[in-house]
Length: 390
Figure 1: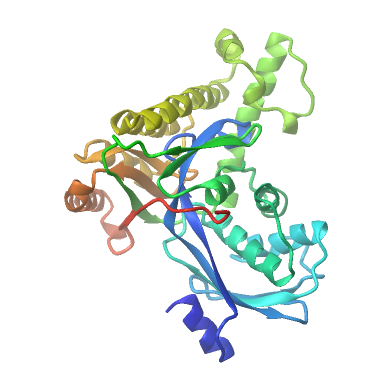
Figure 2 (figure 1 turned 135 degrees about the horizontal axis):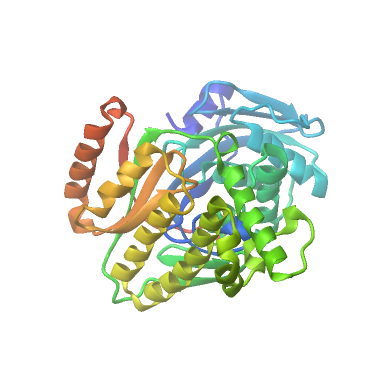
């Protein structure tokens, strides 16, 4: 059943509008944006759709095809504390938008996600598509940077996830057949076209069968460990430092890290090691893409996945297994965890000629290790697409 069909079933009429926001993959640049690093990204042709109509009484009434509970609130009475359910991102979006613009009407809507939750920034996608809908019915026009800022504030200030702007930026700025190359320090970005000499590729998604919530994971702890490393490095080097929450690894030159990394606690050193090497991988990856060198780009993506495991120390047993299988599978140029890496999925850039053998081999080897996930594990082929801002 689609969101349009469910809307008709509930309200006995057609919805007035349908909006879509794509999911995203980040081949290189993971665990970097919250420290103002650089990232690469591609929006994919799967995502979140919402069918909706205006409600003049100011009520927001939503249901999801993925969750049982219906959510409802008034635009002027959003709960100030999250309720720990799927609609928290949307309550937060209503609250954050109302702080900047007057809201006069609500909406009734049905939300539909085209892939399982975990690793493809579904939380950012559902926030953005709902913001677009709520702005539409209230005749509000947001710039792309406003959309990103609002969506990030929902995650940081309402839901309580210390994320950066990678997800939202990819889902807004991306363009079909281009690689997004973004510096999260100043939001400068480049859309690098697919080089005419680059071999064809598909984007493969390997769902572990285990879903996750960032708010309940060690995501925020990793962010604090990065900040702790930056704070300590500044102190060791005699650099000026201020509030802990306003301290980032981007503030600290690589040579300072190399000089004082031996004084850092092991976990802080490893987090910083990942960040600095990932920064370099992103820059090298952008150049490889520009030249059409998909082999080199893929190797860098695999290296990113390796660093995520051994330096950033993330990855569930399921995702680590998927990653290791991917590195040994013919036809896969490169890949890594998609998202925070605590559960969810892996992504890979693959040779389209090997789709069937990749699907068969990865599934066989993975389910041999985790037979209980048969029926939950999924393999999906995607392609790049335009972001919601295009």
